[in-house]
Amino acid sequence: MKYEHSAIEQWITPGSRVLDLGCGDGSLLAFLEQSRAVHGCGVEIDTALISNAIAKGINVLEKNIDEGLDVFGDNSFDTVVMTQTLQAIRYPDRALIEMLRVGREGIVTFPNFAHWRCRWHLNFRGRMPVSEFMPYSWYDTPNIHFCTVKDFEDLCATLSIRILDKEYSSEHNSFEPLVRGMPNLFASHAIYRISL
Amino acid sequence: MSEFPADSVGLVTPQTVHFQEPFELACGRSLSGFDLVYETYGELNRDASNALLICHALSGHHHAAGYHSVDDRKPGWWDSCIGPGKPFDTNKFFVVSCNNIGGCHGSTGPASINPETGEVWGRDFPPLRARDWVNSQLLLAQHLGIDCWAAVIGGSLGGMQAMRWSLEYPDKLKHAIVIASAMKLTAQNIAFNETARQAISSDPGFANGDYLKTGSRPKDGLALARMIGHITYLSDESMGKKFGRELRSGTFMRGSDEEIEFQVESYLRHQGEVFSDNFDANTYLLMGRALDYFDLAREYNDDPIAAFQHALCDFLVISFTTDWRFAPERSREIVEALLGARKNVSYAEIEAKEGHDAFLMPIPRYIDVLNSYMVRVFQATQTGAGS
Image 1 (tube, chains in turn cyan, brown):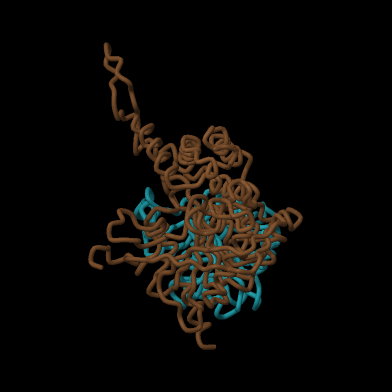
Image 2: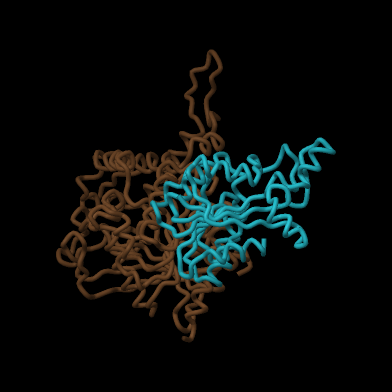
C-alpha cells in the first residue's frame, strides 16, 4: 500500500480537493493531507473503519458507493480516488461514471486477476486463487467483481473514459521490465489515472 | 459518593443566572430580563477552550447528567454520554447544559411571573424560535467566561440549535454535533405536533392557556399529547420487541368478559401520566411550535448550501436507521448541504432498532462514533491552549 500511496501522491495537486471512495481507516487521506495539504473527504461502509477514520481527524461519510454518489455535486472535487475497491462493488461501471461526474479526474487501483499467479492457481489447481493479496475464499470474499488490466481498459473504452496515466506493481522489483512489457500477465496491481 | 456508578458525574446542583438586560426575541417582542437554570460537569480549563454546550430537545431540561440527590432513581437525561470516560468526558471537557427559556424547569417560561403584570405569563408568553435559545445560550457562555465552544451538541430539536449556532455565531464554536435532526420538519412531522397540541388545547382544564390562573390543569390533554409523541419516538420494531401483544390484564378466553389491557396501553398511559405531572402544557405548545417553525435556510433564500456557507466549524452528523420522526434522509440532506458549502463533515448512520429515542441510548456503535469524534474535538482544545 505504501507504494500505492506514493504513486497516487504524484498525481495530486497540492491544496486540491480529494474524495476517497472506500477510504478505509483514512490512511491515504491522512497521508495526502500531510504531504499535499489536500482538503479530503472519504466514503466508507465498514463501521469499524469509519470510527478509525473519524478519530484520525478525517472527514468520512458512511455511505454505500453502489447507492450512488448523489450527495456530491458535479465537479465538486479535483480528484476522486478509489483504491482496491472497484472489485468489491456491485456496479463498478456506474461507480466509474459517478466518479468522473463528481471529480475532474479519477484514480483507480485494483488487483489484476490475470496476474500469472492467479492463472497458475486456476490452471494447475483448478480452484479460485487464494493468496496473500486475495486472502478470501470464493464464498465469503468481498471481492465480487475481479477484473484484469485488459478488462479495465476495455471498460474505459466502452464508457468513453480517457486513460491519462497508468502504473503497475508486482511483488518483486526484478519483474519490472516484464511488468512494463506485459502488464496483464505480470502486474499484481494496477493504478490508473482517468478522466472523461 | 460510592452509591453512584464510577462513570457518573455524581451529585450535581443546578445553578441559576439572572440576566437583567432586555432580551430581544425573534418575534419582535422582548423579555425585560430572564432566568436561566443550568448545570455544569467537569472543569473549565485555563484558556476556556474545553467547553461543550449540550442543547436539549422538546421535553428536555438542564439536568443532563448525574444525580440531584442520593435518593434519585434515575440520572440526568443524557447520562449515557456525559461523565468520566464517556464521550463527553468530564475528565477532559467542561460540559454545560441549560434549561432553555420557555421551559418549565426553572428558566423563565410560561409558568413564570410576568414582571409587568405580576401574574403568571401563561399563554401570553412570547413565542420563541431556536435562535432565541441560541442567543440566550450565548449570554450564558459569556457569563461562564467561554468565548468559543469546543463543540455545540444536540439531538433532535437540540441539533437544530447546534446548526443555528453555526450560522449565527460561526466563530464561537469549533464543532457542531447534530444528531437525529433536520433542517426543517416535514408536513407529516408538523401534523403529529399539531395533533398533540389539539389534545392539549381541547382539554377543558386548559382554559385557553390560563389554567395556572384558573387553578385547573389540562392533565389528560397533556398526557395524550405525550402518548402521541412517544409513539413517534419509538419504532415498530422496538415496540414489538418491548411489548408485542402481551396483556397486562384480562384474558381472551371464551366465556370471559374481563376487561383487556395490552402492555403497550398501560405503558403509554403511564408515560403520559408521569409526563403530565411534571411538564407545563404551555411550554409543550411553545417548544412544539419552535420545532415546527424551524427552517434553517428560510432567511438564506431557502438555499441550505448558502446557509451553511456562513458556518466555520466542523460538523458531525448522526442518524439512526429506524428513526422515522427524524429519518436518516433528513440527516443526509444536512450532509449534502454541508458538502455543497464545502464544510468539513463526517456522517454516521447508526443501525439501531430504538427509533428516534436511539439518540438517548448507549448504543455501542453510536458511543464509538462519538468517542472517535471527541478525540478530534479534544485535540482542537489542546492546539489552541496557551497560544
